[in-house]
Image (cartoon, rainbow over all chains, first blue to last red; front, side, top):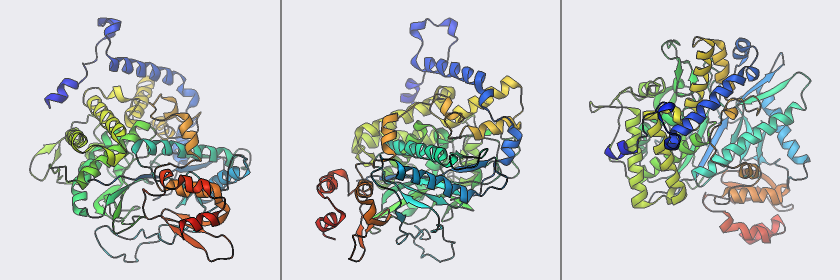
Length: 65
Length: 504
């Protein structure tokens, strides 16, 4: 366990408390992912199936394997 | 020493025919595959036409690894009259039940299998384009890489691992069971709600796995009903005295390359450790089927699972133990069994990275783990629009995550990390892996497709005119590689010359 504890990332910190150079790699990745998610949510309505209810209802497969 | 884990993935894709009043998924799957094969035949780039039929001579899906004789009670699993093509990359592309299915060629390491899994997606995408040119205006075939229609119908993404026949099957069951139950943590593809009866959406708004709802037994031969966590199909497609092929049916089809890499890489390592008796600790769950669902239904990843010795563990604790053993295994014996030190170290590194993140900050692996990516996307949308979890828009997003159309698939827009490059995936649509018998299969099809009348995993059948048909057996999955037969194939001008030099 001890070996693992040392490898854990620091807890996520608020951005305004952190000098930019010191942002850990993982948090940087996290921020990037979050920004991408926000962008994706912004544009997602154009991509989504227009009639969700009908789409879900008509999505029928036969069992396989 | 653990045997080299030759690997394969078989994926059944979901198929929809949109804009048609009456649609037949079997016919649509045939149209899809035929359109691709015909397109290849027309393209100048194709060295030969993959019109070769599949050879069912050695298929015996009813054999049971626990040692039972086939009882003849199982319905034939393969409908032999349907489209069945062998591609020059060594893959098999066919209609199975009511789905298009693609089985990758045999691969010798978990990174190569990701390349061929992505190549399979590209082949399906091109098949859609080709098929849709032949359909009436307003109709479209759309393929999804998922495992459930959200109405209780499930279809599989099966993995295959070559193992040593000498290992007692009971030992495999004991140690692979806890891995298969807990690896969902990082290879679950995620699902909104549950399809198990009596599980309301407020109880399980979102779960880790597509498949956990459909498993009812611990060990067994079935794949379509009463599905078992450990499948006992005993059909090695290789020398049965030396090998077994462990057929893993429980996995989700992954869109994330990292997830596929870890799914196959960790499982191949666990199986190698089973062969070498390297797992001292047994995690025997009181109720494995319930444990499987308990893990899948718990996005907090904290719920304890009861063991028969009275203790409890979490899924993460099981995975940490397996990772710790895998590291020691690598230090003591090396990773040759899964393709070498580099790929082995990469499996261990990524395994540790996802476990660390899942324990502390799962969002950090939203670009690596499908269920995390899907959950963040759908939960983000839900919060933004103030929706409840049973809203059809969320179910639609769940399905659309798996849409293989480049402009529609949500997974392809979310910035998932890559393990492969576009160039190697493109190449893998036509070129076989160089380090397994798939090389011999693929290269012979490229060079002498017209002389090959049938192919399957462990043989090729040639017709060189005049003489009786000649079967070339390939019972050793790690022979027939480029190192073994590359120069021989290059030196031969005709199939007859090849057969003569092979001495068949």
